[in-house]
Every structure is written in structure tokens, then in C-alpha cells.
Length: 391
Image (tube, rainbow, N blue to C red; front, top):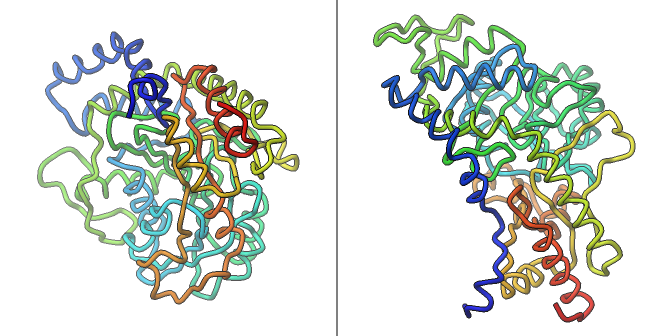
């Protein structure tokens, strides 16, 4: 890479400027961890759980070591039994389906709505069979799934709603935070998330005290207390063996430092998204820009990432990379066509909206540190690809 291109690089994600500004408060939290002398499942994790409860309005927040573990433990705490089926979208990150398998269940795929990328309630109703006990809407990119329509289907089929709200911190429906509209939900604090740590971390959020108590035990080898040998089993009567999924206090310290500026970061992300919308409006080849669906005026979206649908997606990504601009492809192979789920017997064409999204979606750089001028550069490079303009 030439020095000229290197100087113009727009990374897909970085938070170096964020941490430069937050270092004093981050250091204070980390010093407290060191002084407390407990580096996992300690006071700082408890402080974060309480702060997240205040932010989300959840009655209970249980910190764990990843968003994936949060899904697994939430499903187990909700009573998933071996062989129970969970309806999940065919277009999502692999953890939305692998968590079901890891919890002992079986994923059943359904198609998505073409606009908001959430589970299509009609498709859920079509695929849910007699063994289906759960439906897992995933809130992708910047928008909540159709929780009203999915709740109606779930009631009719006697399904428990468990939300994969890993990307959805700050998103709300009629004032209720994502993850609190069913039995419970999860948060992921992977570094690129809207509220990101310096490594893996996650949480379960719920208003159900039994679910919270069960997750709290499962994350710590089945212990209800903090003693070495207190393994009384799970109060729900499952007798389940727990795992080691405790959150590190250093990650909790980082998240506490960043939580104070979360709303400012969300507003900044919205400014960047509007800049993209203005810069890409009317560009041939850009099929779809993200927007809040009109029928969901009660939804507050948050731009975790800025995902567009484009023609010749992979060629465009290569074009941008050649100009020092990072992108990510969400998700190039839909879940029902992943090799690890080949045993379910799906074929191309089974879920056309999910497959179309997998061919066309491309995520552009979007994070609070991103200058507006870099957004303009990305837009100019995209116009140069489709219109032959010089970028």
C-alpha cells in the first residue's frame, strides 16, 4: 500500500480517539478493580449490572463473558429442553442459531422481512411445528424486528419469545428497551458494538426474577453464592450443570467508563447515518438505504452499523478496499445454507428474502470517532464505482 493510500485509510472500525478521551475515567475504574483484588465476577461487574439496569429499565441484568453465552444461558434458564425447536431467522450472525444447539435445542429457520431484516411473522407461522417452543427475533443493524406481529404469532402458537438483542442497546419499542418485550434478551459488548468493551463480554436482561436467578447460577458453575462449594442445583428444578461464563471486571470497568457517553455516541451515529443517506441518495446500484419503517413509528432505532444493499456487492467492496476504505459483509451465506446446518436439508430458494440480503448487504464504516469528511470520502468512492466519477 502506498503512503498516499495509507494516509487516506478509513478503517471499518476504530475507537482509539474514544479511549484517548475516556482514559482518565477508564483508569480510575481499572485502578478500583486492582485495589479490590477480584478481577472476575467482582464489585465492578455488579456496579455495571446496576448501571445497565438503570439504563435499560430491566429489573435484572446478569453479566456474562459474551453475547453468545448470554443467549445459551437465557435459553436454558427459560426452560429449553433437549430437542425443543426454536424458530430463528435465516439471515443473522451464526450465534443466533448455534446458541440454540449449544443449549440443547434445534433451530428452525424462517425468512426475514425484506425491509427491516427481522423475522417475518408469516414465515414463523408457516415453519413452526409441534415441537416449536420458542421464537427468537433478532434485532439487526439499526432496527427492531416486528415485535407486535411476532408476539401475536407467538401467542397463537404458544411460543416463548426470547430476543437476540445483542446489537440493540438503546433500541426501544413504545419506551420498552429491546430484550424486555418477551421472556428476556441479551446484550453483546463485543468491541464493535454500540457499547463495546476491549474484548468479549455480554449480559442477560430480563424482568423475570427466576430467569435472572437461574442465569446467575448457570454462569458460575451452578453456584448461587460466591463460595467455593455451594452447588445446590437450579431453583427451577432442572438440576442443570452450570458453566464458567463470568464477566471480567476489567471489561466491566471499560464499559462503565463508556456507558456515560452512550447516548451521545448514539446521537453521533445518527448524524453519520444522515450524512450517508444524503451522500448516497439516488446513486444507481445502491438499491436500499437503511430507514425506520413507517409502520413502526413507536420504535427507536440505533445505528449500530450502516448497512446498504447494493448491486455487485463484492466488486464494490474490492473497489473501496483499493481506496483504503474498510467494509464488512453481513452475512455472505445465510444460516440455512451454512455447512454446519446441512443436516436440516435446506436448499437455495427456501428463504428468498434472507438469500437476497446475503447477496446484497454491505456495511460501511460507522462509529463515533468517524469524521464527517471520511463519510463523504466513502460516498464519493461509491459514486465513482457506479457512476465513473473521480473520487
